[in-house]
Amino acid sequence: MVGPKAFVPCFGITYMTVTVMCSCLMLPGFGQAADTASVEGANTARLVTIGVGGATVMGGSLIMLDQAWYAQYERSPFHFFNDGGEWAQMDKAGHAFSSYWIGRWAQGLTSWAGLDARSGAWIGFATANLFLGGVELLDGHSSAWGFSPWDMVANLAGSGVFLGQELGWGEQKVKLKYSSWPTELAEERPELLGASFGERILKDYNGQTIWATMAWGAVRPRSHWTDAFGLALGYGADGMLTADPDRTSSDEVVAGQDRYRQYLVSLDVDLERIPTRSKAVRTALFLLNCIKVPAPAVEFRSNGRVLMHGLYF
Image 1 (tube, rainbow, N blue to C red):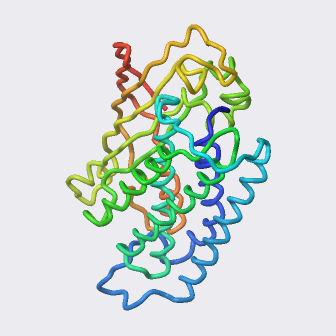
Image 2: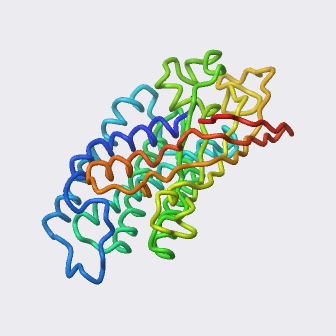
């Protein structure tokens, strides 16, 4: 198998999709959940716009991804691949993160069309799994990878975190976030972990952390600026030069890999809870809230070490 794939097609294309969506994000009414008691019916014209536009963007993104990424590798008949033990499951955490935010962004567009929040949540859930399922189908026809059932489980888990909170609480109390910083390991295998800064942010799993965060305002809202501050629990891994703990893609044993998992406790800022009357600022904060704010952290490693970080990203 070739190198990291989850964050390149899933994370990268997610952000390309968001860029296209931004023209709609700035329209009046976006980003505010529909009040089912006051919305008599959804705006049909806007729903059609979202449906046609969304299908076009997702379909176009998959075609572009196929030509720009998968065309570099030999095609193959559809096949499955069990990659559940690779990269210390960091790629699976990336799938969950991506599906969570695709679901949220899709729901945001439906609220602009006047659809109630629960219906929008189901549409967001379906959109995330259809889009990332399409990416997985491309994997299934590539000799470099294969259709991964574990990827689909991670997709369902991430979008399920989003949907479950919407149906249960009517809001997102727990939010998934992402942080990344290039590591020195990428210099040893730039073809696998990235040659440039941008590539390493997406491909070097050693520097990535997926967070579950909760703001104080989600527990005891006081309509105060302190509502935005909260706690973050992170998961990461380091010491990985290959997907498999012992071998490279050419089946040669790699010596000296000191792999370990990372469990982190940190502080965070929920940007969506920062008070503002500006539509543009509110939209920007919503889009940026998928990124974990750098903050002090305590790191617990699976090899027994405990580290204190004055600033962790």
